[in-house]
Length: 270
Length: 284
Image (spheres, rainbow over the protein chains, first blue to last red):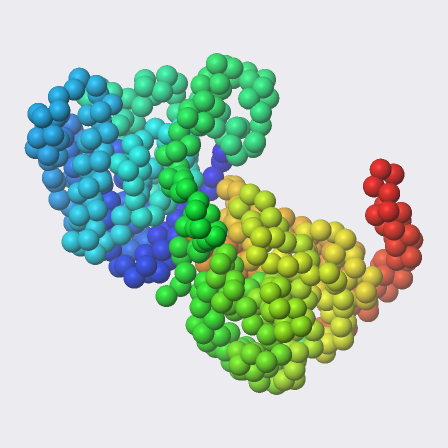
């Protein structure tokens, strides 16, 4: 689980720089929530592209998260990047006024997709590629909205666990209050990821590391004095979220089909 | 003798651009009086080719790209990686390495071990090479391997038993595993083999790996040269492009073999008999 944050920083800044230039972009754009992951992404993007080539969108729902908005604005100032605050409440409320619901997951998904929709709109307006902020923990347990916060053009943090990102953030010199902040999907005030998942990121990451990186069996991991029920729960979250990590399957009819045997690298040099 | 390690980042599927990259590096190495320049695996095409493999395949005996490289090899020897399609085996594509010298192809090695599991899919697109041979070059008998060939101990042994004094490995090895160190964990694996093989075969081991990203995968760089006594003579940085030129004395192979008699004591006929028995009877 140990990383050398300086080396990881070098890999990820080179990745961001090379991917953007390969696709013909100079600018990167990302959603800045005031949380840790997007702060780390923004810091890496600034190091890779220069502050004048990074744009941050701050996309709160109404005024219920004013502290996070303030933190996001402070980060944008600190990084000296352009930022813009767009309240998504009018769009989200307009939809739910016609289709009311009390289910928080529906509201959360809609918010995540509203943010995605605005990011893609600004991506085209600003000719800026969207830099994703999903981490390995979320991707593996499916803690994200498909076509919402998981949507992006490149994802520098996707192979780092949450606990590793905190370590990277520390090396990148992020403010202590960002490093200490309880991770939250921001669906309602007081919500935290760890309450919802039912265990701490330290526990989740440890189980994932043994399960995924080291390819240990669930029985072997439970033998490491980790609660077997927690291991089972994580394993089942991984299985049930596979669809979020894949493109949709295409029904094969012809002799050569997209996704099956029409297989080009997306990175072809132009 | 001067060797140049061209730790480049080839453009995926763009032979024209890569040829330019090669010509520039060769010219730089020539100005610095290098006698041999080594490029990475699939240096003319990039690595993650998939269906692009069809349009990047070429015949080194007739292709204009190779005419230019052969012409460049009049001033110094060149090892280059490419997708090979020979007119005698239409439809079979090989992951190959060519050793060019004095305007001609001195040797072609076709990759024998094609990793096909997890993130690797070489067995789906390439045909398998069948042999590892040594050949006479200016520095003495020389053998070529491509990336994963090097990690199967038997292949290094074949070149060793074939009398190689220099083993040249071209590579497109991805970086895998984060550590506390300043490179990927996987870089250690390549040096481990380089150190062991150079020492126990009393030969030079020249390893050239690429850098750059393809599909989110970082190629790790860290190219190196070990002397015939297992001592590290040069190492390129991880991740960054580099053209490292170092001076070696091919004659030290002799003194290494006078000190340690691994070469003289080798018994290829015993190995052969043992392997024949094992290959014929897997249950043995």
